Length: 401
Image 1 (tube, rainbow, N blue to C red):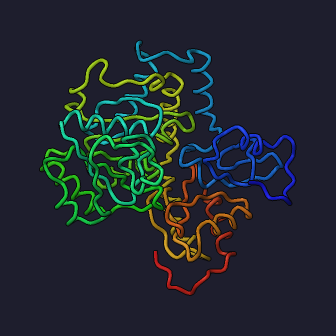
Image 2 (image 1 turned 90 degrees about the horizontal axis):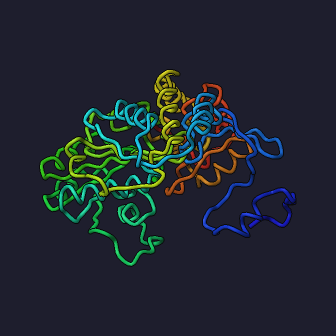
Image 3 (image 1 turned 135 degrees about the vertical axis):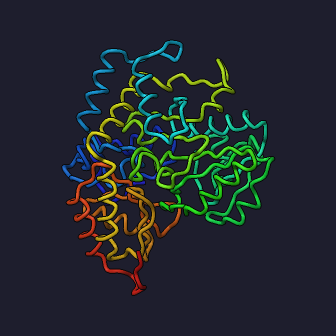
């Protein structure tokens, strides 16, 4: 796991983790000690520009004073209580989230993660429609639990369960004709990411998303919009689907929702919520007071610091300045961007890390992902552009935006 030439200090946690945890994660060759804003500071003193944001989690960057204050104060006041009692901070979190979401989504079920949010959204769709087939989109990713994994493209290689909980079929992405042919009155739900994150920040077309909405409505099918990665301001609106002015029936959120505190949410319309009563859904930690305080702090900070506008400006700057070096095309939305490279993205990622810039790869071997904090500054984009420009392109292909 570690090169023979690399001298590992006794305090390095990597070999200790390797001996005590399941070996299911590839790890990068540095150890964070602390972080501030968009920067990670390592144990050996490196300052790394974080353009990956912990898988899109660090919406406010690292150590944002408003978020830290909210977590600290809530932890001291009431660290945990279950959903068996009402909490003022949970009520605030639900109100803030509903106000930020598409107009018709008036109810919230708090959970702990994106996979759990999608799992419950799919269960709700099956209950409401009394149907047992779900459509997903090719290249999409929705999680690794039983239902979420079942609707994740190409999950058979790791799925593990002997059976899927319902029938699943996949609509080819951006194929409107296929969507029209496949959406019928025996389908419970269509689940879709407006911007496919793991696939390389691929933004689905407005025409395709509109077709899904239209034909789902015609057939009594629920449209589930998975905004686990694209939501909470990352798209330049609170949710990417709002840029299309499309109303989903159910929406899921997580990752950036708590800015670093694990939490997730399922939002739905009032008529969908009316199908559920005590005992029909449940979670121990979902909607806990610390998570709720984090949600409130994240939403209020996005609003008061003008971060939606900042995301739009930084996206425009990246598209303008970063089509250089190995980058042939830029796709995606907001600060969920895919840099399409003329060489393996892992090579570009590793080269950027030598420039003290952290980025991410994707399931497409030639797409580098940018999942920067919403507080990204113009100077950070300059730093990325200069580093990319220093890398010679592998081909002379014409570059297009």
